[in-house]
View 1 (cartoon, helix red, strand yellow):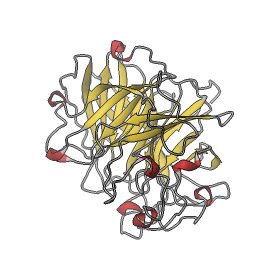
View 2 (view 1 turned 90 degrees about the horizontal axis):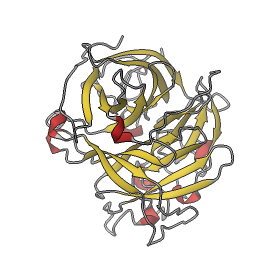
View 3 (view 1 turned 90 degrees about the vertical axis):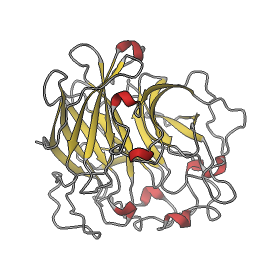
Length: 397
């Protein structure tokens, strides 16, 4: 049981219809269930639990999957990529409000059994889909229980079976990918690359439509050709691409999400229904310096489909936005010295006993032993999520 350090709190609400009902903490020294022996090249244990960059509900009771990213030291270790299965029980009238139990850890491999690694040196020079270098950032489950992940290095979207074996790659527009891949992030930036994602600012978020027919991946920042950088190399772009892919046909559409500030980035996306989503937009500051951590509801209706455009049309209409939760609202008591820098995961869970929607938000601890993994439970009134559709799963799974 991952019970140590669990803290139950009551907090005020933002707009009266959203409440923080509990926080769970897991020590950064916790071991996962991979049973990998020894230590990585940076000295971190191979089986250290952490780096949680995504969360998704499985549709089974209180079971979720948690996704670890590429490992410690920003790709300078031989971390083996993996996801975890975990029971998360949320009971507002009990203490603790949240209880956690890690039940499985699954390592990710390609079709031939090669393990994926976060090592930034394990790249393929021309084709990211032939690479074993992987920085998994977003996760969602298909109707049959397969696991989709988005990769920041490529970017790519992979589908894995329940045992972690890659089944296929989904189509990605060429405009998202740099032409030149390298070990060091600085070597993938302009002038060597004139199009594609910025280094470490790739496809950060991933979700699936409630009916399971489409996946949606969203970029953390603007693409290079969409005005990502100024002449001095400073990040100034605010237009992030949101990609829709039909799973059966591979047909794609693209939309634009406009950041509130070029200093911000997108950490996650979560489907509310077939045209509305929650997007986690945040700055890169923690503690008392944190200024912007918001969960924003967006609507694709009326937004311009920019699919096929190498550079964004100047008059493209972005998605409509409305703030659902300001995580730094004083009523939640998250802001302050202990505020995490990296809120990264969003998942709806089973409805709470009073009928409110349950939204879980996770924070990435970057595999730091001194920093806990955090899971926040929010209760959201149904009036705040009109049109909500729960994800569908097949009964035979």
